[in-house]
Length: 175
Image (tube, rainbow, N blue to C red; front, side, top):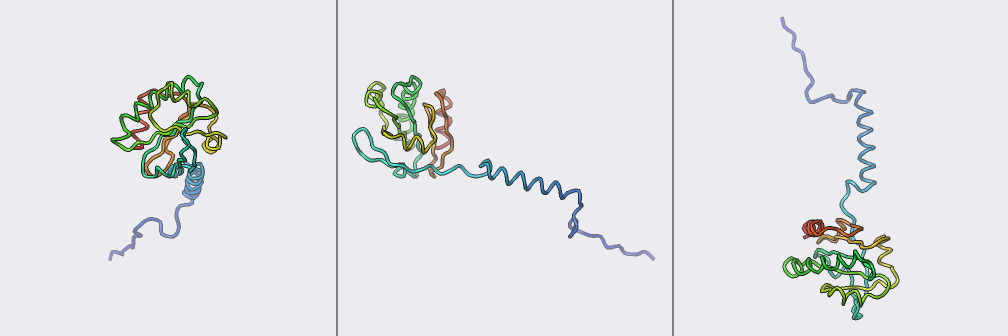
């Protein structure tokens, strides 16, 4: 007579092989550190601020929630900032009205009016007189460009003059 043997179905039951315990612990530790470093989390929310335009009008970043925003920090005498201003003018013309893209130039220190005139800037320019917003966004060099999506999250930051193709690619990511 043949005996019936019961076979366990569905894995290890209550006792997984002891060899897998170190692997499971390692996975938990790696995931923990990835979350802690921000690599597995969603992009951070952009910090709100209020600055004045050159005409004295107060503008807050929160005014643009729901729209993609490019913030470009600049110094008037920075050659790369002057080049970037021309590219941003192009992007403003191309995506401003049609896609709702907002470009905010954020001038640091002085001679901003001269910069705006020289580059014929057509997007809003704000004056960060005391560098509060620059500190908020950890600006240490210019040009410093921040890309914010429609949900108000900082998707990318770039610290250097970027080729037009890169600027366009980053803008496409937030539209």
